[in-house]
Length: 171
Image (cartoon, rainbow, N blue to C red; front, side):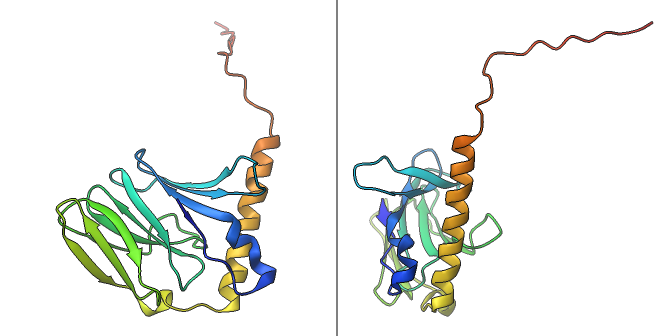
């Protein structure tokens, strides 16, 4: 799990209460930790991986960017605020990627593989800095995701028992 770095803008402190997890079910999940001792809840699941996800890390310089790695060797860069569901950038290494780390400037990602190789990957300039508008966009996205999760929790649960449907045919 990787908690989001804190915002330099106190009005957008909601980012410091979310974290990402990588999973062997081939997904990355965005979670919200609302209160101490309260269970976290899933805000979004990203199911677009081709193998078990071994690591996920928030970008240190841009509030909506994060990188994920999977067992098929893919390292992908995602944008939390993007309307499309897929990664913004991706590269495939020869061996399964087991861990990721960003440098402090956010312009490089180090990827370690199961074969013991280490690759240093460059990151596009647009992910290496942020503006107050970027934090506002993340805050807006998080508010929307919270509202969707609240609505889903309040929605009546569907009856799990099979429903019989009677049809009448006229001849």
